[in-house]
Image 1 (cartoon, protein in one colour):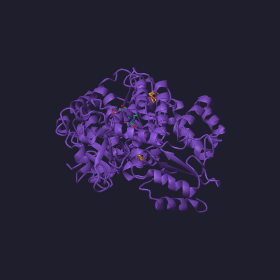
Image 2: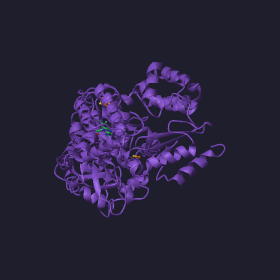
Image 3: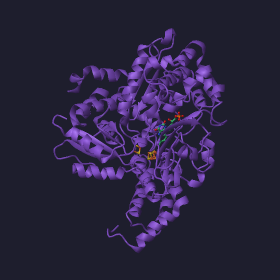
Image 4: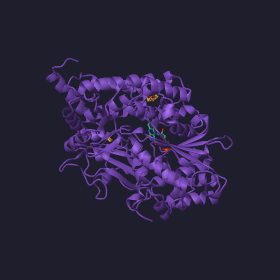
Length: 158
Length: 428
Ligand SMILES: Cc1cc2nc3c(=O)[nH]c(=O)nc-3n(C[C@H](O)[C@H](O)[C@H](O)COP(=O)(O)O)c2cc1C
Ligand code: SF4
Ligand code: FES
């Protein structure tokens, strides 16, 4: 239960807003941190804490690309293939990533370690091609840089 | 004064630390406003400066603040740090390198309209940026620049960072407010405007990060000083985000109207020319994916709001994406249409359906299965969207389509000729 485990953090989030509903997005981030994705249980807890119906919380999960209603890999690799990055090799990088990981964008490796996604502009077009790994920027990504990142995250414990 | 007004961290190491910022004149404007200016005087100074919103629309900032009713409380300031336009990465650099200038600008805005709270809405993908911003806010609280009875005055103000969760539409100010209220990011019907009916239905000023970074220097040095930079109608400095097929992409700060596309792309202190030797500019996107592309004949257009508009496009957020002669224009238009189809919030039919059909037609053209009448079809879909949507995204989505057809129709025709001569194996 979130409310017991993260009591102080939840109180701090709620204190930032005059209306509880505003805590829906921050609490969903907490749910994903705890359960790995937005589980039914997590959604119901957010609904209870904020007084919003579970249906509406589910709708929020569905609307935003950074929320997931299904399990994903332990590490999320999001390669930008929007126009500015694509002008500097992003599509080749996506092809390389697909080969290296053996999965297509949108898929998760069978061992549950990586989820690969293509995403729209992430604000790093001046260091294209760019990607985010667990929401941290990795920029000027060459195939070598990509392989190194994957190797580092493939070690035991990562 | 140095070369930079906004990107000052480029000359001052560790400017993101409060102590360094204060040593270089930081929070002086805040002190000045709180101790020697009334809220109305702050608004008047910003009005007189001619500062225009840097988030895209170029609306006069001081005028926006003056629309806020004086007798309704509470009031809010919301900083738009959703920065998601393809090719835009300026607000990120301000928040990473010079966060206190944004914080100080937001505080001045709050004081001007007598708001009690500031929310900074940062796009979810900028989580690492938001953490740095939060660290700066914590420093400012600890130094007494934010909080109860700031600097011993009767004014109190709070500031919080709020993370979005991935949705371009939340950069549209009313969708942003909905999102901040914990809802899906559907734009609101306007009027009423946020100035009277904003966050939680209360008077709210929404401003872009870069806009607010201009406010401390305006208050500290005055409107007359500010107006010595830029042009009569577009005063002040601006950050130009340069990306695409250039040698040195990046953020470049320059006075509005004092440099041209050509200077920005080829200038020694700017882009230093195209990525590959011997290439030429084919087209320029002045404002990411959202404004019409311009052909190379527009290279000598000065970079200010009026001039770019006169050339047939918009300066918008000044996210200049350069396409050289290696770039397939139809493919580039497809990429932009794909973006808008992905980001359409789905609230109104012309945009939801229109972007879907545009994308379908582009997919078949670039796959070599286009039909001879596809250019007319694209134009007709775009016409059914323009002006018929709830928010400007629907119009934005038509601009790569119509502008590429206007300037580069031959490239579409070449695709369609090839499709007739050598039909792709895969059936449509
Ligand atoms: C689809 C759409 C996306 C937008 N995205 C942004 C954005 O990412 N950042 C921003 O500051 N303004 C964005 N805007 C403009 C805002 O609606 C609003 O005009 C702006 O935040 C006002 O601040 P300013 O006057 O300081 O520019 C967007 C507008 C639309 C229609
Ligand atoms: S124009 Fe598009 S993005 Fe804007 S409200 Fe309508 S569907 Fe949503
Ligand atoms: S297009 Fe990839 S970061 Fe902007």
